[in-house]
Image (cartoon, rainbow, N blue to C red; front, side, top):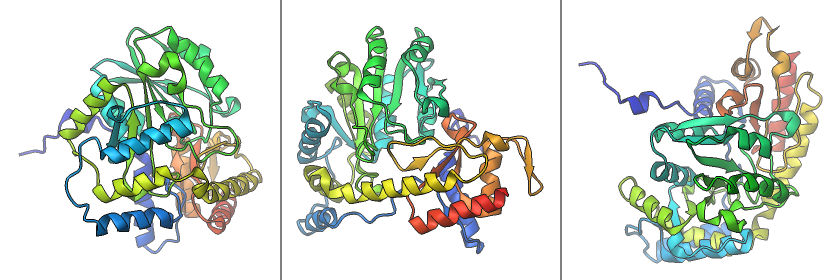
Length: 395
């Protein structure tokens, strides 16, 4: 009997970020000295005050199944965090804790989207947005931007993309992969457009909110006219160096939160009990306790921009948040380097993996085919060596 996989899984693309990371690991096992700048994972250890809270939870015998939407004490802590950092008022019934922000986003898509609905994705966008929309049987519509516009869309572009089938738009600021941060003024201008279309829901992915270098994070849900149709997604993976702890959460109108809880109850149920207890401590402590990581990311950003600025044909904007640079490498398209013809960003990313032993991710996966994503969540020495190798290979 032949394998009969569902159309659902056959139509689902493989994550290019995870695929490149897997290829890098495979080459490492073959003895290659690979510098991996493909994954968005901080290289810091989880801060001790959070680890201590997890140890205490173990000693206090937290080991039972958790409520599907998360411990009440954690949901209360999340409400305090939203009020303190984002000027958004939620009550605990509006909060759902999930196994990472990715599950939060998937829950929202599954409970709001129907087949044929359109989801607007300002490009570049995180690779999983389009896949999640596809999984929900919706159609994703890209709104393009370029390095010349700092990878930001305009209100005019947004209005032009809206159709009667538009059901949702995903915003992500600070942005993965570009590091772009929308200002409050820019978000309010986009919000003015969305005010005219009450049938459109807004998902605001703010997972990188604390990793910014001067432009304060602004939450769309704090715009009163949009509060009742905005879902704010966040988590502890990036800012607190807790990627493997798998805790994400959302704040939403209560009827959406209840629907997400219902969906999650049939998929994974509640998230890890120890990680939830540690997250209460993480969120209740002042943001200043993780500032040392943000400061180091800024040093690395400046370092990699300076180094890439000396590599012919690589053009960068100055990211204001997250820990990625997203250079335009289209200068090399159509050129032959070391006997290899480079036609697109995927060819370029594969070329520097094979010739320079540096793993990045093609911008095609993010809806930006002229670019590649480079993570600088790595040591300064690794960054220096990686760019040195790239420059040498391209010569």
